[in-house]
Image (cartoon, rainbow over the protein chains, first blue to last red):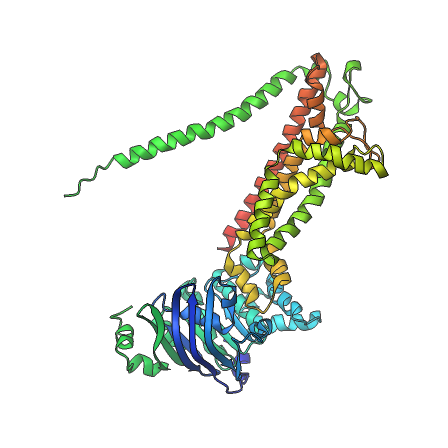
Length: 267
Length: 295
C-alpha cells in the first residue's frame, strides 16, 4: 500500500503478549475459560472459529473494553511488556492509546474527515496545529486515503463510502501510534473490493504493529495472517483448540475439530 | 396435507390498513376543522377591522376599536425565547449527567423524577409561581409579576420534558459509536464532544422546537404570573401579557370585532406553530438525506 509502513521497525520490541489462564463470564454465562496463549509481536494473528466461541470477547479483554460491559468478569492475566494489564493499577486510558481497536462497522465521528483524526490528537496533548496536520496527512497516506480525500478534508466523514470510512478509522487509530491494533471483523460490513483494500493494508501494517484480527472468513485468515488461533465452543464455553503458524494450522492441523473446521465439514 | 388459503392474508391486511387509514384521517380532519372554524370566524375581519390594525393600531383596547397585537406577540415570543434559552442548555447538562456521570441507581431515580415533573399540570407550576416566585421577585424588583416570573415558570415547566427528550436522543446513539471514542483512549468529555453532541444534534433541535411549541402555547401558568398588562416590556421585570393569556382572559365577554380579534390571535398562534413544524420537517429531511448519501 505504502512504503512508510514497511520501512518502520516494529515498536513492540520483541515482547510477546502473554495470555495466561484468561476466563471471561457475563453474569452466569461463561464465554471462555482458561485460555493461555502467547501472541507474537509484529505479526498478524487471526482469531477464527464459529460464532459465540468468545473471539470478540477475547479481543475486548486486550484493551479492557470489557470494563464497560454490564456483568462482565475477567479473570487471569494478560501481560504486555511484562505488565499485567488486567490489574487494577493499569491506566486504562493510556492502555487504550497503546492498543488501538477497529470495529466491525466503520464508526467515524459525525465530524469532518480532518477533525476525525486531529481532535483525538488534540485531546491527547498535541497542541501544535501544524504538527497535527502533518500527522493527519501521514496517517491518511498510510491507509492510502490521502489522495482520495486531500481536496475535501473538511467535508463530513459520513459522506465517505463504507470502505473509505473503515480506512479513516484505521488512520484515526494509527495516528496515535499504537503498538497493538485489534481488529474485530474489519471487513465483514464491506463489499469485496473494499475488503481487498483493507486486507492489503493489514499486510502492509504487519511490520509496524502487532495485529490481532478476528474474522469469520477462513480464506481471509489464510490470506492475511502469519499465525492463526482457532477458538471452539466445547461444553458450553469457548477455548482454543489449535494455534500456530497459519500454514501449519491450515494444512496440518493436529486437532480433529480444527481439521473438520478447516476442511469445511464443521462450523 | 397442509391447506393454505391464498387470499386470507391479503384480506386481513386490507382490513387493518383501512382501519388505520380512518384513524389517521380523523386527526387530520380535526386540524382542518379547527382551522376552518378560525377562518370562518375571521373571514370578514379584513373588511371590518383591516389587517394592518393588528400591527399598527396605537394599543390594544378593543372597546375603543384599537387592536394592536404586537405587545402581546412580543410577550409570547420573549417569554418563550427566554425559557427555551434557559431550559435547553440546562436540559443538555441534565442529560449529559444522566448519561455519562450518574451511576445506575441515581440515573433510575433521576429519570423517574423527571418523568413525574413532566406530568405535573401546568396550573400547579403557575400556582407555585404565584405564591412563591412572584413575592420573591417582588422583594427586589416590584411588582414581581412579569416577564422574569413568566420565563422562570416556563423554564421549570419545560425543563423535565426537554431533558428527557435529549436523554432519549443520547440513548439512541449506537453503543459502538461511544466505544469508538473509548477505544482511542478518550474519556467522558471527549465522548461528549466527539460523539454525543454531534450524533444527537437532530434530537436536541427537535427538543428545542417542541419546547418552543409548548412554551408559546402555555396559557394558565403564564397568566398567573405575568402581570397581564398589555405593554411592550422595557425590562425583564416589566409585567407583560401573552397572546394565549389574552384569549383566556377576554373571550368570556368579547363580542363583535373584539371577539374576531381574539380569533385572529388564535390564527397567529397556529401560524407560529405551523412554521415551527415545517422547520423541523425540512431539517429532518435534510438530515435523513445526508445519512442516506453516506451509504
